[in-house]
Length: 171
Image 1 (cartoon, rainbow, N blue to C red):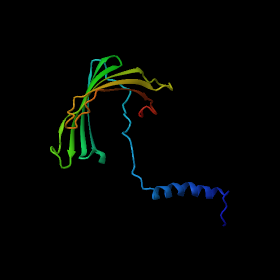
Image 2: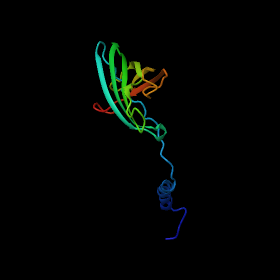
Image 3: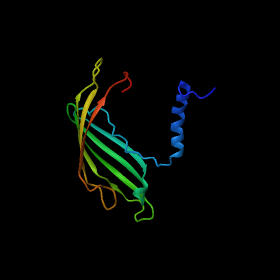
Image 4: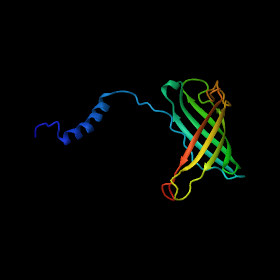
């Protein structure tokens, strides 16, 4: 069958093969950004405590040399201060693996976060509106800057959280 530029099958092949060819012949390093911060819209009930622990192990970029890897053990304690309002403190324990420098693995407390989280709209059955929460964080420079365990800067940020159930068991 001769090539027909108006034949729909020929256009489909072009759209399938062109990205593959471009990917194979371009030799650029992949770049990415830090993942989005995620949280749920729920808050700790009034008068209760909630403790969370998480651990993250990262291979660092070449620009971080002589630092190669970082382990972050994160401890967070939240308290329900009022109805739909929680306050929390979060402090990471950092360990950085270095190449050929002393110390080889500095370890200690990183920058500490204080936050307030307010749930101003709860999700209701048969409503199209999601649960809505706002979170405000202040980061204090408690980590040792000389050992790369802190930024040396006070930071703050706010974020909004929307949460909608897809089914009674899935949010």
